[in-house]
Length: 285
Ligand SMILES: Nc1nc2c(c(=O)[nH]1)N[C@@H](CN(C=O)c1ccc(C(=O)N[C@@H](CCC(=O)O)C(=O)O)cc1)CN2
Image (cartoon, rainbow, N blue to C red):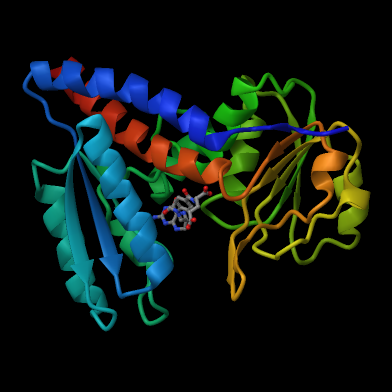
């Protein structure tokens, strides 16, 4: 078997066509959506992600605001920037690029974001709304994963999904999305304490690998025909490596590669969250 590739770039391009029309309609009503980014320090990977987000904004007509801050910024100075963006009427939504340098309190920074401007869906209030099944900005990578599975007609109803990784940006929230009634999958969340990872993975119809361990998921672990989404990223001397080893495409039914799979959708759904918030504002005015 050779897996069908879940093409994140082509799917992102479809989303951008839709967003471009929606942003144009908002602008006609006098509303210009604006996304801000807060980048602390000079990590080249984070800087590249932030650059990409601003390029995406330009493509669909969203204005963008940058706050690039020194690596040694204090927590209180970072929080002052967050307060400024909370109050800034040109900023519809914003993100604090993660990870933050070790001396900063990431959770305190995320909690200070106005939940209504939380374009990442990572504020505790928005994660809580997701748990309760209420309307909220959804975390971008998990939203991208579900969109990609649906775009390629991967069966979710009754499927057994195995998620590897319990991080807050992917592992924990993807379990919440896939177990909503609208998706109705059964989810097993694996992590470093899982006794027999290969046994868990081998039972999965859908595998979401978000551990950040290069080549963790090998072909012998994968049930023939399963959908495999490679979400983990590790920067090595040989470039970016995902969590999925070579050879998995020969066994899987569907494969979201890395790069070129879920990553572009993370960016697309960031912009979608901003446009949706601007549309809510337009509907209320
Ligand atoms: N505040 C946030 N910080 C981080 C998030 C996040 O969702 N919010 N996720 C990641 C990084 N990230 C977005 O910020 C991100 C990762 C990957 C991609 C992407 O498009 N990747 C490409 C490859 C890019 C490359 O070659 O370097 C791909 O997969 O094709 C976009 C965004 C951690 N921080």
